[in-house]
Amino acid sequence: MTRKWIAAAGLAFCFHGLVFSQEAKSLADRSYKGEVLQKVAGLLESKYVLSDKAKGFADEFRERCASGTYEASTEAKEFAGRVTGDLIAITHDKHLNFRVIEPSAVGEAPVSPLHHPVRYYLLRNKENTGFHKLEWIEPNIGYLDIRRFNHFGEAKDMILAAMTFLSGAHAIIIDVRENGGGSEDYLSSYFLPHPTQLSSSYSREDDSLTESWTRKDIGMDPRTDIPLFILTGPRTFSAAESFAYDLQSRKRATIVGEPTKGGAHSVDVFRVDDQFEFYISTARAISPVTGGNWEGTGVLPDVTVSAAAALDQAVALARGAGEAYGRAKEARLKKAVVEMQSHLDRAEKLYRESRSKDAKASLDALFRIAAEAGLVSEFFIDVFAYNYRSGENDQILLAILNKNIEFFPHSTTAFGRLGWYYASKGDKELALRYLKKALALNPEDRNISNMIKELQNRK
Image 1: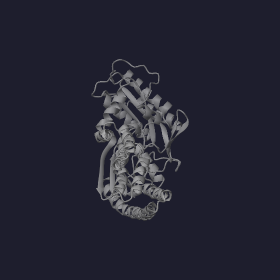
Image 2: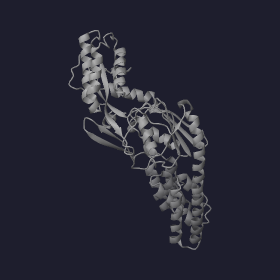
Image 3: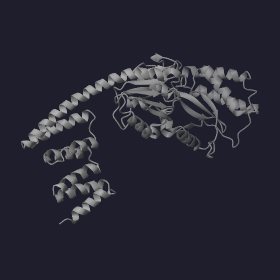
């Protein structure tokens, strides 16, 4: 999990006043290796998020260096792996990572500012922006396996498509058992009311707390009451843990599986030289609900089963919760339809009595209830209007067609339907007015264009 400003920019490098050589030096050079190790220790002491422990950690690492622990290491990756393992053993912080800078397969220089943007671009494409599997497991149970959280700007089209696919579910299972984290948790925004505060980030460098809130720009209303189950395991890490922790702390989801890896810190990247870079935890999460975080302990499941058995267990739980959710949803729909029918009966009667103003009020009430129930769409209105095409009640047909424009003011179809209505009644002027509006919205609609030409040729 990277700090927000890093995630927003893609990645940030802190050069720390170091001078880079043009060619990678050999680790067989004891002096060079010593310089690298001392730079690592210095960065750990000056940058590590827990300032009260940073010097102790750095001194312990220096002692390991002085004991000759790394003298035999001459291969860069093996050396970096040993250093990383020791740093994690000292700090118990799994975010720390001292690594070799390697170019991607497309040819940018590893020390180039292009390196990390290109690397993340390739990774995003390789991993399908983190979206591994989307499935309708059984009637009304949806499933999403997401394995990395990319920046919301990169993932927003994909996550909206996934959440739209799951919109009819009566229970949802989110699988983060293989999710190693990423830029930010945007999934919480689809299941919590806006605005809801999520875990904040405290930065040692700035001595400041950056708040995190659910997003408003998610393309749909959040599903705040859908039964939600989150699958976790020992590989669940960082931003994926934040997602599980925030939903669990607000009693919004049931966590099923094993405890997570336990990484509540976020990192900055510091280039040590032209061969190595150091990912250091520079900030830590603080929950507005618990006042703490999941560092070291991980997120503890509500239902503990092996990670391998978590999906089967969640499906069993989702089945019962989904049935209850479905019954409540159906009861609300039945109530809405009964009320809508009452308003429709009244509107039809009032239109027959030429009481158009009162009839419109009843129709307005019908559509208000329909919208609240989630029924309104262009197709819903088209089918509704179709029942009045016989001409026995032109007033209500016209009112419904106008409702279509009211709800969908940028729809070619909505204006085209109204144009068709007036054309069928012989009102050339109004027909052309609405058909031209339809064509302006979609100049490539040949059917509308042909209808306009036909009307214009009529005498």
